[in-house]
Image (cartoon, rainbow over all chains, first blue to last red; front, side):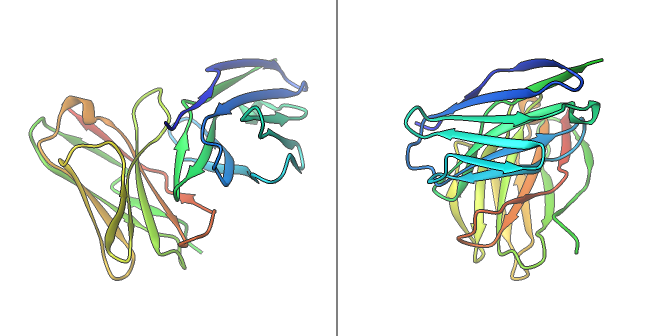
Length: 109
Length: 112
């Protein structure tokens, strides 16, 4: 069945790197996504990775995909207070996006 | 270029009432998907519209229905509202066959 799992909370000191992990179940997923949601707001697409890639870097963001283990991670370098939000891992399956429950990233001063 | 616009932004309804939420897709997009996000949860897929037809449906009861118009805009209707229908309802648009989904800011529905 469809299931995307991720840890619920992560606390990181400002300036450190944040790593958010996710596992998914559908091996036929073509695209995997990371979305950001700030309080009271909708979803902002941060980055995505195609399933035949194993890494994608975009400025402070690095996405790693281990297709064999169905494991996806998002690394945010030099974490800032503005990165405080909920981060959703998601997979595309049959033209619909399946989301995890989200990881709340808390930034410590 | 406007992204996805949803209306209203907030809504309060009483149990048993009916509600209609509206979505205008991003310019150039022809597919609209609706999601329900309960507090503290990830968005759950409700259904998807393409060419004015419901193409896919998630695990939601028939009380949830929708429509897509020739200009690609869409409505989500919920009948016989329950307290558990209180949530943020998100609309996402895309171009058929394309990976890129754009989400609106959502409509927050409170059922009392």
